[in-house]
Length: 471
Image 1 (tube, one colour):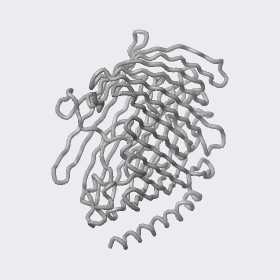
Image 2 (image 1 turned 180 degrees about the vertical axis):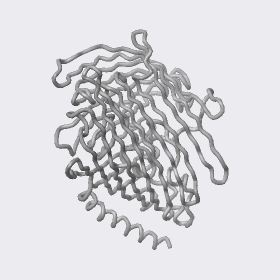
Image 3 (image 1 turned 120 degrees about the vertical axis):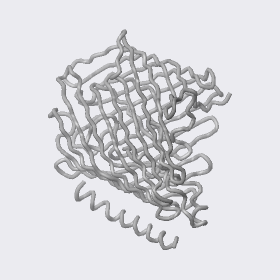
Image 4 (image 1 turned 90 degrees about the horizontal axis):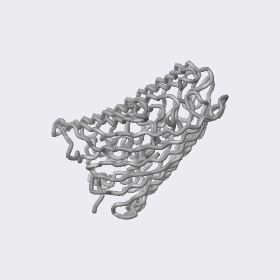
């Protein structure tokens, strides 16, 4: 039976590889792999269950909710949501972290048709992470998780709750049967103007090799982003999974008031199909196809998408775990979109991550349709590098570098470069003194994406009761 199903899987992978190019040429968003958030628009990452070989020999599938990676992930992170609630908890809800950061920014705007403007901006940011979680049932448990990460800015004696990032998420996981699993997810983000981002551009789960990108663009206006997804996962065999993920997304962006308020809205509906097959305990192959139709409403005649669009991405992927801490993945395929006519380009992904006793290192590249903090009908190239060094048990540093550019577009589109150095010194098991400095350079049309650069310095205190630092 296992050999017969493996033969069927190989035929299905070949059929997808032959079918997807004609689909891309005839009509014209890469979604998550089997271990990614079903509502995420980040690049796919294929990972391997270390027990897959043993399960195959035994001939019995694992429960769907665990084998298929159907669990809540921390907001803006690739890692699963930790179970340590800390001392501040009330019933379902708990405060997982809190921070106070003081920012010093120098912003220079060079928007087309306007003289350069430079200003110094400082502010105090208060932020926290609140989580509510509950498990229902015992034999086939259902897990409900609610996450909210608000921010508050105080600048020049004024309190602003709408100029920084606000993030929220809801996850519900159902184990429908030993082979079927369902994960419902909703992710909401509010990016205000004058927002200060001093975090790492890439979140990495080094145990699995999965990633989560973070947006680093500045204003000039605010951006609202919401995605709802449902991942239906099926264990075709003990070493093969098939996941179908319909998604619905809403994006809204406004321009700076000084330019005359412009507004752009994008509504997306589509789905993705993911096949993942384990060749061994360390090697995985797969295929991912996603397509979505986008409807735009735009008051600007010069910036942002001007017509509706159908976006497609197709990748054939390969993942391998090398030794105890290396994860490697590559993908190659096509990306396409239609804006009046068909535009087809190369789709690709590549990533490598490694975690050692004192060092974590990851590089990730993706070419396709992804959200970088602005609304576009074109694909983008994006590459991220993250390196963390634990110099002592108390002191660590993290370096983050990222760059993206718009591709598959008749005219040059927005692009951005980001670099950040973070320093952290543990005062005790839960409190850390943090500091850092960074640089952001972005090229935009001056309406929905600013053109200029920002220098940032920050210092503050972070409280994380679930910290894993050992003294």
